[in-house]
Image (cartoon, rainbow, N blue to C red; front, side):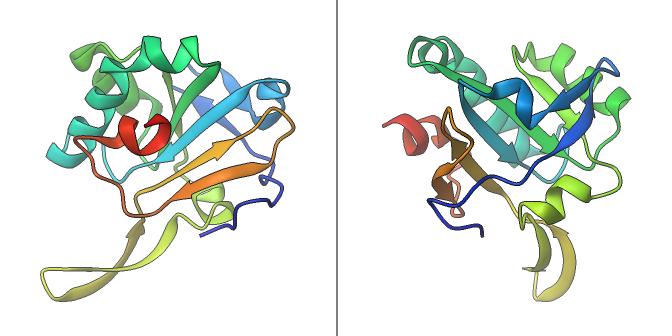
Length: 148
């Protein structure tokens, strides 16, 4: 994981609408940047819905929320529509952002080692510095891990 206090790596990617989203779009704003393995799977759905259910609270505290996975923009669009997600999701099909944020790597599942997305969340301040890094995500209560 990237360390707290370090400058967040620059990124740009395509969201569910085909629009380019860049780190510089959030200069002067706080950003919750969360990485998750796959649209519409149980853990990822629980995490997204928890963030959705607390979205107004995030906004009231000055936070933007942005998700990133290796799913396609079309998959993200279906995921957003199915669960009424109010935030954008970046399609990082080339793994560029995932790797820059150290959210791609070795993981063990059912005793087997594979490479994949490491569920990770970074909170980035208005100047682009990482102020929190969460690696042990509680998918059902993730909002409380971020904003208490």
